[in-house]
Image (tube, rainbow, N blue to C red; front, side, top):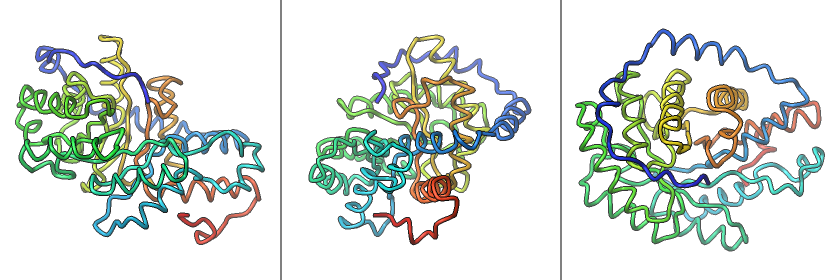
Length: 318
C-alpha cells in the first residue's frame, strides 16, 4: 500500500471556502463515461489491472468461516490458471489487492491466507459499520480488536451526523482517534456519500478525512441507497488532487457499492488515469470495493481468450 498520510492540522478556512460547481462535475463525469474506448488487444490487460485493485469483499449476515475461506482462496487465484497461461501471465502473481470482511471474521481470513502461504492483506470494516451510530468508545474498540486479530487495513465509517451538521472539528477529532487506534494498519475512511446531501459536503468531508490522516477515502459502505457514482468520484478525486498539491501527500481512492461489471471497472480506471495520473492506477492508491465484479471480469477475460462467453457456473467463487 502507499506511504502513510501523516495528516495535517485542521484547516477550517480551506474547508469553509469550498464550493462545488455541480453542472461542471456532471459534464466531466459524462465525458469520462464516453471516453472509455479501450482497443480490444489492450482490454484484457486493463481488466487484469482492475483485478489487482479489487478489495474482494464479503459483508453479509450469514458469513461463515467456510465462505470466508473460499473468498480468500479466490483472492489468491482470482483468474483461472489456464486463462492466465493463455495470456502468458501465469507467473506474474496476479491476485486481488486484499480481502475485506467484518471484524469478527478477520481471524478466519488471516488463518486461511496464512495456510495458503499468501501475504495478501486482510481489510476489515469497523467503527459501527455501516451506520456508525454506536458510541465512540465501542467504535474505537472495534478498530483495536480488528488490528489485534491481524487486519492490516481498516475501513472506518465517518459519523455522517457531524458532516451533515457542519461539525468539522468534531469529525476531524474522531477520525484522528480512529487513525491512532489503527496503529500500523492503513486506514480507509468511508464517507457514505449517499447520506451527505451535496457535492460540496462530499468535498468538505473528503478534505477533513484526509487532514485527519486517512490513507484512502472511500465512497460508500455498499449498504446505502446511493453508492459509488462517477460525479461523486470526480468531486472526491479533485479533493485528493488539491490535498496532494497543498501537502505533497498522496491519498488513495476507493469506490465501493454497486460496481458489478467489467465495463464499469474500465470506466473507473479511465477516471483515475485522467484525473490523477498513472500513479493512481495501482492498488497502492486505488481500490475497487466489490464482491460480484470479479466474476464478470473473469467472464470477459475468458471471452478475450476463447472468443466465446462462459456461463457463470464455469467461473465459480472458488
